[in-house]
Every structure is written in structure tokens, then in C-alpha cells.
Image (cartoon, rainbow, N blue to C red; front, top):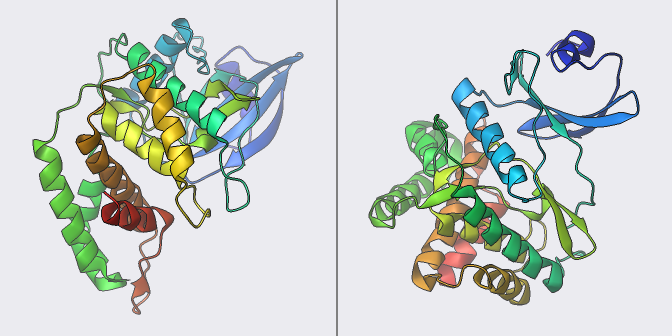
Length: 304
């Protein structure tokens, strides 16, 4: 994206504005836009996206917001489009209020907040069933594991333990094929960092750019792993796990525990695959396979 945001913002009929970088992550850059005492959020995607991906994501956000789910509502451009394509796909949203939760070894998620987050994920799943989409995103539940498989030779060449990792990917993909088929729309990244909070309540759900049709138990499994075993925490917290799951089943009571255990492992390995694919070294010396999500995969594999 060019350094001149003026022409870009005119697509949404926004004139002179102040921009402040709020977040620069692996997937997106996020800016606060202030114009004429009004505030917006501008997001620039770093990963390649096509029009189908954007239409699905932003259409989902519109649908959820219309049903009372606290999601940032996207703005349409002057051409009545949901997205602007530049050097990176840029989208404009309403500004959501609330605070982000800090999660690390010293700050584990409180159980009341985990309970309410579980309830919100269940509400998300129920509301997302009403989303009628005409374009399917290119990403799906197994995309990241399939990407790792396509890079088998690179994993073997550059990672110590790369061949064993790819074998695990192949096994879990084979099992996933016979598991319950997609039954809804999943957020696919319902971690604490993608929510805003006001006291113990969820004030907003953010970042729908990984959302896709999928198995809702996979979504629940990923959230449980992230909430009960945050990156940097060093250990699993069973109380937070239970609180989140209790919140979810208070809205959606029919949860198959055996299938859920599988999808927890699946989601951890899928996230690990994303990290290792993005971080493939180019040096001749093999690198160790170290990742928080791979650590969690091994933990949940031993504690089924």
C-alpha cells in the first residue's frame, strides 16, 4: 500500500484524516483513522487474499453485527464494494471499544471471563448459521496442514524432526476425513487476543479473516487450547478449560467429548503447521522445531 492514504480513504468518502498504527502482526496491519471527530479502523492484509475471501469475511461480519453479535461492521466503498485492493487488501470498520486481555505466565485468563467467552463463541456459532454466503473462501479447515504436506521436502531438509512432524500431519488429516463434516461457520482464531472486553463481558469479536465453513468442534477445540494454555504460560490451566467449556455448553449443550478431544489436537497441529511453514529457514543447518502450538499439541496428545 502506498504511503499516501488520502486517495485510499476517499474510497469511503473520508477526507483529511490522522492515522495511527495500532498493530503490526503476521497477518495484518491495523490503523486507527480519525477524521472530523469520527474514528474508524483501517486494516491492511499482509497475506494474499482474493475477492472471494474478502466478500466472505466481511459479509459474515455484517451478518453477525445485524444479529447483535459484537462484531466490527465493515464500511462499503463509494462503488458499494466491501473491499479496496491495493498493494495489500484494505478494509474499513467501525471502531469497537473495550480492552484486550494480557495472557502470559503472569496473567492467566480469569475463569469468569473464560466462561463468558465460551458463551460468546456458542452465540457466534448459532448466529453464523444464518449467514447466507454466495462465495466460499479459499481457506478451509485443513488448508494449513495441506500446506505443510506440500512442503514435505523443505521440512525434512531444514527442520530437525521435520519428517516426523509431516508424518503426524498426514495421520491427523487422514483421521479428519472420517470425522464429522463441516456443520457451520467457524471463527478459526477465537483466542483472547482477538476479543475486546469490558470487565468480564466480551465487548467485541475481532479478526474474521481466518473464518470459513467448518466443524464447530474444531473452533471450540482451538479456543479451549488457546484460553487454557496461552502462549508463554508454560502450563495448562484445567480451571480455565472447564470455565470456557461450561460457558459454551450453557448455550450449546450437545458437545461430543471424544470428538472434541480430537479437534483440540487437530487445531494445535494446524497452528503449528502455519508457524513452521511461515518460518522455514534457508540455512544449511537444520533448525529445531520449537513452537508454542506444537508444545500444546504434544501436551493434549498425552492428556486425551
